[in-house]
Length: 485
Image 1 (tube, helix red, strand yellow):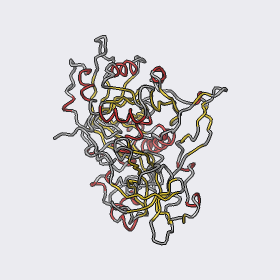
Image 2 (cartoon, rainbow, N blue to C red):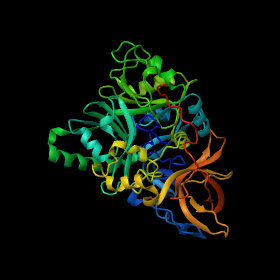
Image 3 (cartoon, rainbow, N blue to C red):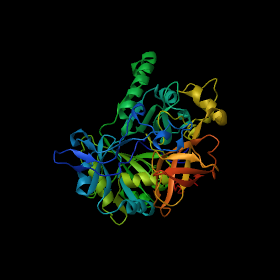
């Protein structure tokens, strides 16, 4: 995986299941990894949900059972059970604080920069994020487009070659969001897409069921699906990203090597020149996109017969420390929230449909005819788009909260009343002090239909104290995607 972005013409990916572990792990005497209040990504059916009964004096509203909270106190994690990306050793050698995340040991931050410093570095220069834990897929064949247009609401048949769009996998019947995904059309019948690590088992089971059903009707050769286990994935993000990458692109190749003609949402397969003047043994799939609101690139790195290539590429970027630094999950979380981008498992789950999650724009305009729409959940989603005031009980919105402790995931949103009653009307799903906005408390979450309009004054219970807040538009920080003028 979850800011909103139009078919890569308006925003950027939600990203990708990226729940943040608030504290790094430490190695206990028995070799296990001990974490305190580890936020775990769990399937929606296994998630504890906040109710008003958790806060004395608060009356439960319609939203009391709707949004997930995932905390586990003093959770012990066996390091042997965690996956490692191709860049794990590099992270450790660079002083990373490693945390359990979506089944992997991932860097939270690095010794050279604090969380806020790393966040600001990304906004001002360029940061490199390891996102190799995410699941990369290849889907090919004459049935690929039909399959994808059944499981997503996007107009993928209108997508040009080498162009991407944010989309979501939908649950049949309910229209609930199984996962958010970025889908790239490489050729007429060839697609590349990325899904969230924390949803791997659910996504693979869902896709297998859908693909098997399609093949049963249309034949084994109709679709070829591969999970690209031999690829690393890194994200170079920030205003200096293009100027850092451009000189590294190998000039003598058939593809257009000028990054100034590669616009937001587009991709190219390009070779890079390594420090010894050799050329990368494989072309890298370079997509102009990201999860920070900044200009940048996500780079898929093949490792077949080239196991060291991910390290070689990362070291190439890091050879300019005055321009590029490594960044981890802490900065990634605050950057994506400022950009208004969802985090799967917090801000969107199978309990949410695209309209409920303020993602109606994911549904292609030519796919909104209820008499012809065939995608999963269309019978639920399309009436919600047509008549939201009649069909939706809640909406995803942004909040700006008064000075003081920030409202975190699970904080209760209440309606302000003259008699002092605290009636629950929503819940916070993500929240923190914004580094870019000087520590202003920002958050996103769900609020009762009718109270979702910008400027509506509400209250949020932070540490059982009522804090004033205002419904705000997102993104909180203006996005800087590189678009064609």
